[in-house]
Image 1 (tube, rainbow, N blue to C red):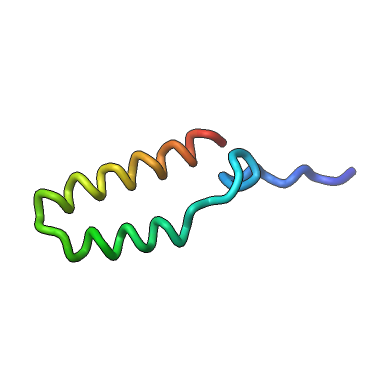
Image 2 (cartoon, helix red, strand yellow):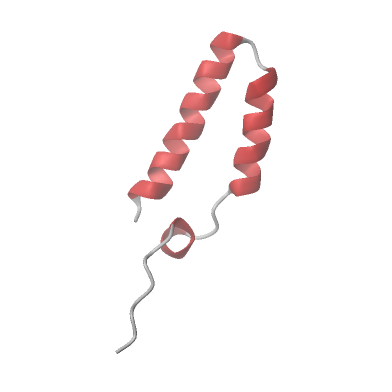
Length: 54
């Protein structure tokens, strides 16, 4: 009896945008504090949507 692998964000909703997230994190690092907060919030929302799709 073979086990079914656990779902991953990529298996559920396609390619996981890791490189895109890394680029956006690098941009957030250089942004002013107020913008960084909003920028990181949107990245976390995107991550939450990927994880929530599992």
